[in-house]
Length: 96
Length: 212
Image (cartoon, rainbow over all chains, first blue to last red; front, side, top):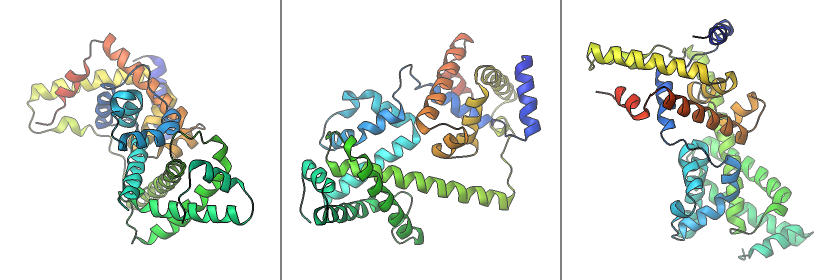
């Protein structure tokens, strides 16, 4: 291990900061499988989420038409949660 | 309540007097009707928290809508755009409250964050497989130590180990949610490239740690 890394590790211990667990390292490696060079940002996804949800509900193949948005929803837990919540609201309004 | 077109919503909300008041009241009812669906995975409408959260979120959403309606581009129904804002507001608040409560519980229980590599203690694997896992873990640990910046490491610990919502982690790192995602994306890309350079295959690594 390089001196810089050893120093950083010692500093973290002195500050009482938690280290990465083995489980977390495996989860991190698992997320690399779907990591791409050019991913959308949360802001880009948020800007289009309303239009994307309506297109999805009208039966358009949004996964094929907007693959980067679809990919971000899978990679970013919070954006994915918000999008699914929006779908539930729109489906609920359609049902009433 | 009359159904409005996007143009009518913008015109009525931008007007003065009764027209505006009626439009705000109609929009308030639309937000309130949507929230039980939005929050159904987290909070039941019969929960004691629900009413106060709904009131708080509705007020905040209305303020944001009035403040940002000039940015609405008309690519969806106006009400869908409003629901999107309400959901972001509601879930950001809900995540913050949940995380605060769970952090307090942990303080009361005095639970420590598990640092022992329990993954190595799988009784179903042979000593050879266990040694292979240990070796693999050490290599991954080295790659992570060498590739991630201190800021990237802190962000990962906050989100994965401490279960912090992105908004809170971003606040502590003096940034915003968008930049935080980018920071983590850069970290993943660096790790992926380094794994390739090290001859470490993601599927092989995951395969070695599959539960027997």
